[in-house]
Image 1: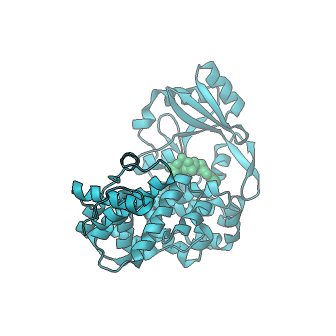
Image 2: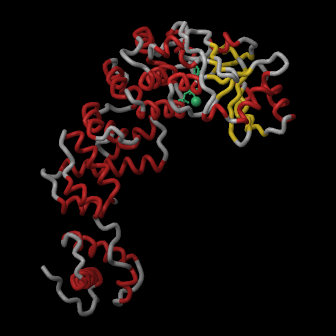
Image 3: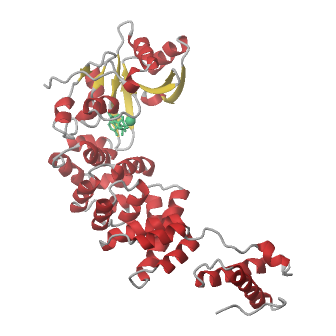
Length: 419
Ligand code: ATP
Ligand code: MG
């Protein structure tokens, strides 16, 4: 066993509310521990996210004790033993020791228990079943510390059995391996995941979403996606093939690429790809719209003659917005293994964001309000694009007059446009 059995109770772990809560839940022969990610990451010296607690108290008893102490709580998942307690303004998810007695691959029927060991055994990976008391002393019932130090992600118990209890664990294995493991992914787990692949289709997409999003942001995402691809697991999970080589090149140029760019580089070639991901990854409407637009731009870019010109990029940026064009340039560059041309980058970033033409301008020239106004402005905009967004006021006047003449037929005194 490793000597490193204590975590420093610093940063988030030093908050008074946490210590009041641990004391409150553990007096009179009961037990309360910090568990899971907070302990794991503290041992690794990594930042910690949420703080989860495990206790021998039933949820009702947790509620009694915290209410008596004047703390607020939210009954987030009483059936599964979870109460969120607010202590000194911070939320802690407190879950009663439990065993999962009946599982169907998606849900578990739980029985509350008294033993930390049983609670550990219902968790997924050894590195996620570490418990720290208020002094930082770590209990390690299933050998998580050793695996953590060796940077191994291993199922607790038999991988096949553990996956059959909850198929999400296959994706969690990929996610945690991509985040915490060094070296090759655990072979026994991979064989089990392969064997139990059909269960993946039964998962709720909301749960899948969380795991995939975290996977895509993990440091070794590329390695894991290659492992998945090697076992033909990419399409069943994502619903479409992924461009791993383009993604790899984008990461080389831009290792800090955010989740959105990563997703785009991996999966988006055309607008419909965004609709596929909306289903498989439960994208929000805003996320889908942004990726759909990006798909449209990438499709247009791939049809254009190369090298691209600054004028074309300005035009696209005016039509679609600057941001989507810079995103598309990054993704396109990965796919072509080219460096981004700084002239194109500047063109995208400095393209005009608004049309210089307004409805009021058109109406002032005698066109009655109505759908025609929009048509006229669109026509003037197209001519303005063709001028590469000239700022010459005379030319702008000419463009709007010409558009009016063309669409209303009645427009007076429209001087013919220059060139
Ligand atoms: P993160 O930093 O990503 O939040 P975490 O370890 O806190 O990491 P969570 O998904 O928040 O991960 O889960 C909290 C803990 O609950 C895990 O550490 C693990 O012990 C347990 N757990 C969560 N989901 C499962 C599952 N599907 N099967 C078994 N145990 C699970
Ligand atoms: Mg967590």
